[in-house]
Length: 191
Image (tube, rainbow, N blue to C red):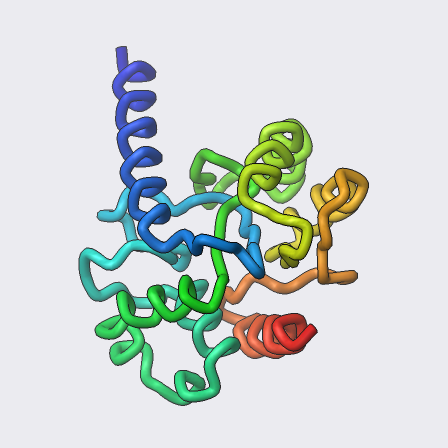
């Protein structure tokens, strides 16, 4: 019985997050970012709440570091200011042809090991490739975020004919990799 209720909650959360994400989908995706997994429920504190705008969030590192990397005018803005202006920045991100999805369709809890995450990404590669086919056009550039995604998906996506820009991993902007993430995203954005 518990498993069924967890499944229903998961389905509801994924559907609601996907609906929110769709509001920011560009008509033509110039650059597709692929992170590891979607955020947990919006009530749970997480550093990967990229498209949620329902409230001010602390440590929304994936969003704040992506915006700071892409937009020089945002580079020095405090996190609180970026959060207050989140909808505006997401609209700019959309208007500039940027979009973010995740390699996995189910949120991963912290205790899942790197090996387990990579295996889950490898298992879901056929679904990921189909989702990317629906989003990407011939000129769409792809940037893979986090070692798990890069290690498991870079070559299969290239073999499927997609233009994966990064030839090495782009660190997830966790507590210690924020500067490296911003530098790598900025360089790749210029390609």
